[in-house]
Amino acid sequence: MSLQPLERDDVAAYIAQATGSEPSGDRVDQLYEKTEGNPLFLRELLQLRSSQPELSEGIRAVIRARAALLSSESRAVLEAAAVLGREFAAAPLAVVAGVSELEVRALMESAIFGGIVETIDDPPRWRFTHALMRQGLYDDIPPDRRAALHRAFALELRERRGGPPLSELAHHLECAIPAVAPIEAAQAALRAAEHAVRQRSAHAPRCRSDSVKRSAASRTSCRSSAGISSKPFARVFSAATSPTGGGAEAPYQAGVTFLRRIRC
Image (cartoon, rainbow, N blue to C red):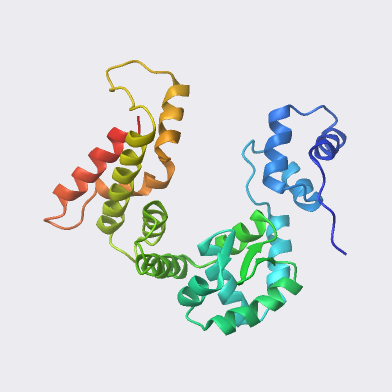
């Protein structure tokens, strides 16, 4: 029997009953967004002490129990799908998973029956039924296989007509380290950042120079208007400041200097 998702007001009432105190609006919003109103996930996250809830062992157990009902072939394709994101299409998934599109469609049927994914479009696209479902599957992928899957998706993105979406390519190359060289990820991040800055220059006012005092709110707004979040590039920064190749230091430093500058 599937549980119907709770509305935001229901989530607030649930939290108040479970904790014995009225939750703040931010706390309700945080848990409502994280759980999407799923009562089981809400109960599990309320048991955590952290103010930034992650997956509890109870949630992981539920996800693993559902995945255990699948064939090894279905599980492997779902792991590849988890790397692609919350929503995914048949064609890129087939490339990354190394199977045919017909096999993808067939293997998704068992995942739909198990309540792990749902169909959202035709030609076939699917979505994980819950963000935590995707996260749980993703977290359980062995690191070497996860990096290889990110690398495979980066290769698929590069083959797309009209060129790859640069920010998405940079993200997957970063996650593919060490299956790809850190400098390759850093250069991809640099290209994505340059493109974002060009887009921002065309459609929004430029950020003021670093010599001008700005509030935290204006810095956040500037990053948002550029379409840039500093978080995806954190590991690229780390890699860029620790080059391993003798001739790699200059492009590494050029990339990291530029990226730091545009973070506003």
